[in-house]
Image (cartoon, rainbow, N blue to C red; front, side, top):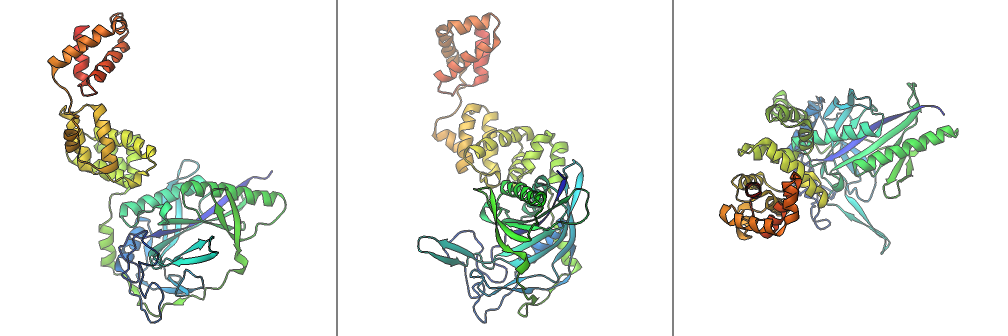
Length: 476
């Protein structure tokens, strides 16, 4: 069998985090009753005129600068003409001839372990379409225009990726850059980041591109990886059987792990692009570019290096914490309140990640405050509660961001530090557990844990474990 190489380029759509739409003042909030975030502009009413949202331009510029693009300083918008029920104007306002950003790149770790540049052909601004809701019961389709006019940027890469691993690394890099900029939350499950995969295969060593297909409907990194593996195998099987790959758009069904053809690219319609006559040119000055550049945050790679050098975190901790901006924010803010960096990291790496997994919450979606985590750590350090109780309190912080000081007070969880009272309880535990006592005295050091456990049980978990250990060692 011949050796084949996969060639992949991506078109990534990102919904921007503006409060209002790109050409009107309607809300961009996710959800809401159908057709309640609408007005004459985003529903395509005759005579309604669009007005460009300045924040959209700033976010697009910020993403372009962070991905090493050139900024088009004299740009414009174009109309992409097509009919579809969720497109009320019968055209989409986009940028074909003068996209706002061109010729950029991001660096990822390639399949061979070396740093690799994935080139960005362009980034352009455009408006999102509405959403069709198919009602099988009544055999009809309904249109919700809440999403119509939500601002998008489309990031178009060159065909520089060679595997699903490189694609996911590229998407992760884009996601983190955009999240750190605050330009979008990049939630694939809510559609605020969507990727279309253009894929072809060719014989290894060839410089001729094969016939490509476009894969749509990909709403998670795992789905993207599975779709790439599946489509690569499908195309290789066709070529091995002496058949041709047809250039077409395919839709991926992640439940069935199968893709099917939507439409042939051979009959792709002519979108008849022309400059939008209702919008003025987008003129971007050197000063405006400098302002946006000056507001750039510390990105993930620099932040990770600083955590290792300044806070002496293990590389593993720094890698996980900086992978999610909310985690990085909580870590830094909690440390800034005077807490030891490794202690804060331990709560994030341990209990936070455990609870995320247990409650099926993505680390991007955590809501608890640094202030309440800081209060919890202080309660432990002041011996107000023990670590067992602290884990119970932290779960409430994680789920409801409660004030730990009030919670401990209201639920009677304060640690018992009364040495005299604890000594009497420990004496009873020793008297009732002769086998464990004999094991400790015969040199089985771990047996003391059973006695500590019995003491904690007798005090309903409120005893100071360090004090219990001290008393046990004295008495034994």
